[in-house]
Length: 228
Image (cartoon, rainbow, N blue to C red):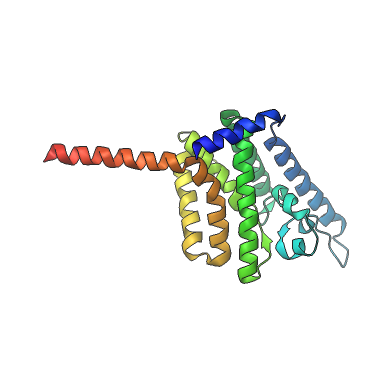
């Protein structure tokens, strides 16, 4: 798999791909402000306007011709927890995305991001045809970016609640428990979302994880032999 990814990355060198994560984040912030302005301007209207509702990955509407949703869902900002949380989340996406671009290079990060996006779109369609549930969010996709960040920068510290310093590897472990919970008890939609968002992680880090497990098993076996 590493050789395949390396070959794919080399093929992309013929194209001039600029660092794009900052544009995604800026677009996300712009959509948030635009949706906020639209909601304020229509506050006294009988029919409130929501910009985000026209951009989400709604599979039913995609099948009815609104194909732009296959792209615009990527820049839908986090919602549901207030303005402050949305701004913090957008900044967090910017920080981990640009860090991965700097570490991997733009093309390798582009491959990782596109594989995750396509896997999520496939998962959305599978969940729709099984359950009829149409709306899909990008939360799991951006959680998968954090898995890659934690694998490359495991000792980077974040301040939980702005007070408690926690290393990225421990936050990734919490992230992993969240994914595991979704896979085991999240229903069809939760399972599809979690599994789809782990495909790019598995392709990029699966071999490293297997090698790590082999090394740990080898060291454990040597210690057992030594004790005997």
